[in-house]
Length: 291
Image 1: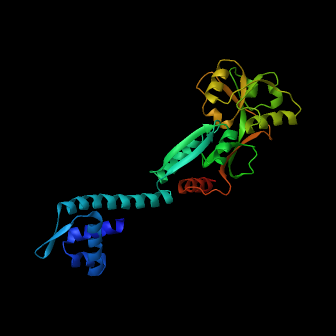
Image 2: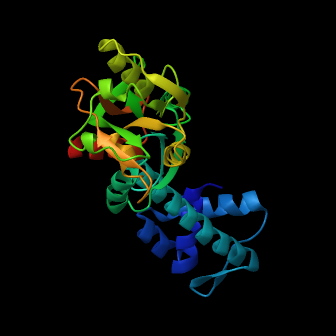
Image 3: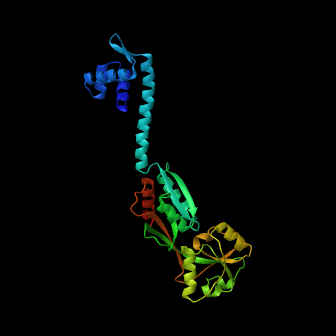
């Protein structure tokens, strides 16, 4: 039996006449009678009995009717849900977020959730290079990463560019209006990234462009740990502006670095030539609409 036959049987059971059921289904009576006979032959049992002018369900018929109602309801729900997923009303959004960009994501997701309240989320935080690998392997559909990186395989949407800040555990009144890289050479510096990644590269290239050799004592991509290290006086750090939102109330002082060519760019990537789910497409539309 198929779902079409189950719908036929439901109509017969509820109308109790072949003629009335055929009219309800917009069919002629003979084909409907043939379908009922085919179901009885397939199941090897009588499903309806005639009682006067009306049809009565046998015990087998009553059992089939109960299951037919459940199965047709499940089918209708499945079709509805698949359409909703296809339209992005439901579904799952698989997205990666760079360790330095997590401050930005909650605001975006709040807006997205207001538009699509039934979408669920898989959010993975990692280094930008690792997120690129996960998007390439289709573990994630989208990722918010730090630039620059090699992105030939990806479609990239630029989100924003922000300045860098110098963080230290000791206040410096001379830095209140900002500071330059040249003034930071005496500080033991920690970088909030690892070698080969976008932020790490941007910072070192800015020092190199001015022929300044920084005193790099550590690399730490774990931002909460980096903040604790700065607060404890282990070293100072250079970080993108978004990290400043995570500063504790006491123990760390932040000063804007005024170098015109030192900035941190953030982008949203997806794999070129790969079909995005409706949820991911709607997220992209939200990003583009907010730009």
